[in-house]
Structures are given as C-alpha cells and as structure tokens.
Amino acid sequence: MGGRPHGRGRTAERRVGDIEFDAGEGQCHRDLKAVYNDGTEAVWTDIDLCALHKITLYYNSSDDTTRAVGE
Image (cartoon, rainbow, N blue to C red):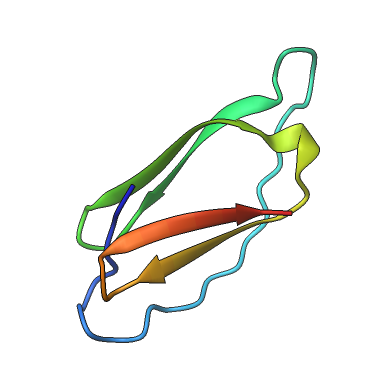
C-alpha cells in the first residue's frame, strides 16, 4: 500500500527503532502499519514476525508507494 512522508519532494527522514512483542503461542502473525506525518498510511497484514529479525520500509516518491522488506 502507498503512503507519503511529510514534505513531498524532500528526502524522507531516516528513523530506526526496535519493537518488542510477546511471541507467545499464536502471537507471531501481526499487522504492520506505518503512519506518515501527513496522516497517510501504509499497511501490511498477517506478517510472521517470529520468522523475521528485521523489517525495512522503503518509500518511493516517484510512484508514491511504500514497500516492506523482511530479513
């Protein structure tokens, strides 16, 4: 899904953070939502967070999309 950072045409600010969650039974599959300064959102559903150790979000201003890459 698409989203756009505040200040179209500017380089998006790089932010890094850690998120911890309870990985109890049945708790690995979660939704992920990025909310930009202008209120637009990018949403991914049913991500297996137990299978990943890192998720990187990339914003493409030329087509106004955000993608998530898991490692």
